[in-house]
Amino acid sequence: MQTSIDQTKWYDRIWAALIFFTRLPFWRLHQPPKECYTTVVEHWPLAGWITGGAMGLTIYLACMVMPQAVAVLLAIMVRLLITGALHEDGLADFLDGFGGGGNNRRRILEIMKDSHIGTYGVLGLVFYELLLAATLMSIPPCDAAMMVLAGDTYSKMITSQLVLMMPYARREEEAKAKTVYRKFGVWSGISLALQGLPPMLFFIWMTGLDWQMMIFIPALVFYLLYLLIWRKIQGYTGDCCGAVCLLVELAVYLVACAINFMNPL
Image 1 (cartoon, rainbow, N blue to C red):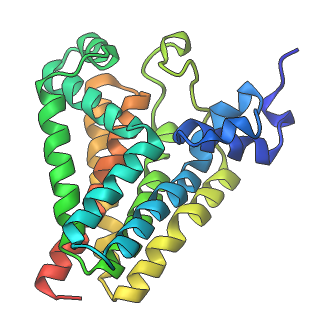
Image 2 (tube, rainbow, N blue to C red):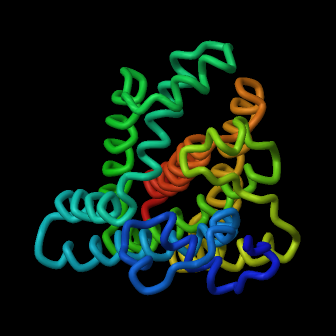
């Protein structure tokens, strides 16, 4: 007998999000109903507390005994291990599809579904990881530790809006995870804000960075990516969500890096 999503428990939905967005063995402790996986984006920032928190803690502790460059690379490796490079895979597919598919919607979707990585994907990942490492190395260690938690949760909160702003670009049976995220309501939107905003607000308060630039420039990057996706394929995919999340997060770090360069923390 199939369970309605309205009959599932709130903690099952959180559990599903942690299982879906990380490779940590949460599934050994509890198996939520399959229907809960349609709501995982509603709890996406909670996974960001784990990945961003692990990265931040690694940077903070490792910088006590080794150069910051080494600490940052270790932190990136920790996140890749926790997530299984889930979003990086999405970024590579996104860049291959949008880079190699031209304006042909069907071709873009075909390339994105292909498991092989192409030139655009390789180059994009290389430059993404280089920029990620460079920005985190340019900020004092304690601030960098706070920044990764802020950027991780904030970008996931923002990117979840793709589900509301456009339909899924494929049929449900063609989805990689065999699941299409449901459109969520007002209360879920409030929940997302409570999950994603506090680390960013705390980081801004602690560092004194320009809150307008930190909040609105990454949001503008999200909107421009949304327009690109809509123009090209008129809908989102899981790869789009992963790619947008990483690029919005990178925008947070680039903005902080630019502000710090002009006015050192």
